Length: 73
Image 1 (tube, one colour):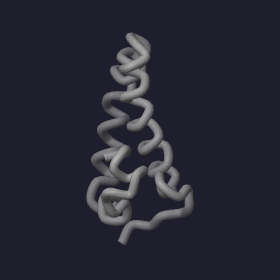
Image 2 (image 1 turned 180 degrees about the vertical axis):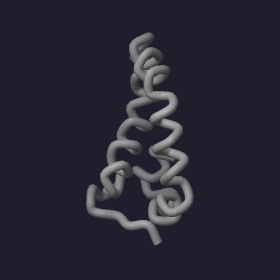
Image 3 (image 1 turned 90 degrees about the horizontal axis):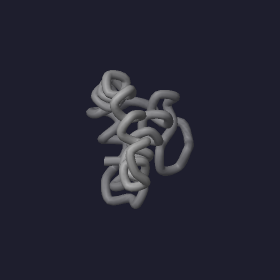
């Protein structure tokens, strides 16, 4: 999802409206696992950094793509 937003293949506003809670809760519940897995290889770190960026931007109400404030519809 993060990569698709960054390259403009999907509408971030729609995903934010429908997936905001899922992204934040999933990251919160899996953060220990993500940190552990990110340290296993450079490929794993690259994979999870996209999820971390998406979580961090959305958590504070900002667009991943533009960095501008984003609001739920």
